[in-house]
Length: 443
Image 1 (spheres, rainbow, N blue to C red):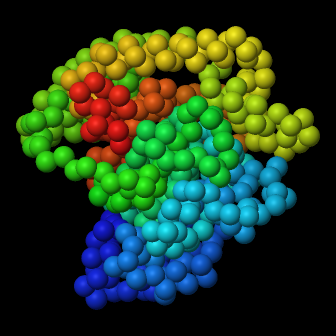
Image 2 (image 1 turned 180 degrees about the horizontal axis):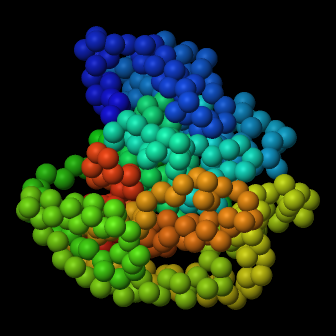
């Protein structure tokens, strides 16, 4: 795997390389076939200018390359959100708050990354700007057979590929139902979703004002901490307890349904290694997860809140939307006001019940996704592939979306072996509010 942010920062301070050389290397990768269709726009001048001006000892990121999902406002650039509907939108007059914080920390912006149109899918396809192929960030190679590229996961597809290939050290993205953790899983990198309220969404095009979360992908957990501290403008306390001092849970309900053989093997191997290292792991039912589908039967937050934002655009230009995104947005058109209010209340009650059942546990372990990434050819845009696309999309988002509904935080960790497909089957997620653990869990 290519060097991570912290290792590169140490090398620069030791004098074995410099920020200009690192910037050039990142740009070379960004312009290579590995990043084909991963970027909507490259900004080499901005990256090189920052690399030549920022001093490493003055900032935590110090001129290193950061990619920006095409969902976020960057001053002087048009925010298209992976669509053609917004291509003539005026350029942003200011950076969104997340980008401003990255700049203040010394980030060099390498470019805008491709994404699922309007962030509304976990597969990663885009009919307008193409679909970047997944890259194995853990082993620095293409995922699977190079002749049969696999979907990168979404909606932060290009952000994941930019980090996995080494074009960027941090990929700024968003997570409404899994849009950080799913692409991190399918590209073998780290994806951390913080509790939604911790990073402002100001200047990010919304999908669901209830569930949208601003967060990032990196190559290591240490880098994820750096990125989160910058984005949240807070310092993360580091736990010093040994592994056996933590109590972990594995959920049997829903989270492990329909796992394919490769995910099952890697997940069980990961649990065995944790137990051998002294971790206390309990299997629990958490049957409240079975309530999620009935709770969302009227459509859920994303279609309703997404439709509210898009309704004028849809009236003017619906024919230029991705048909699959359009189909999901239009579900929100039919939701009644009382159904939406009932959903808000049902979620609050559900969160309270789940948190009560998880008191005493530090984290819950589950597969990020129950399946490996599909071949792009099986889910590419086209009505003849819609059935398979929606089947795969539902599976990819099933586990991660439960965490968003819970208003929790989660991290997707690569644990596949060499020669196995990336699918990151062993993440942990932690509650925002969990009794006596509340201070430590607010990450």
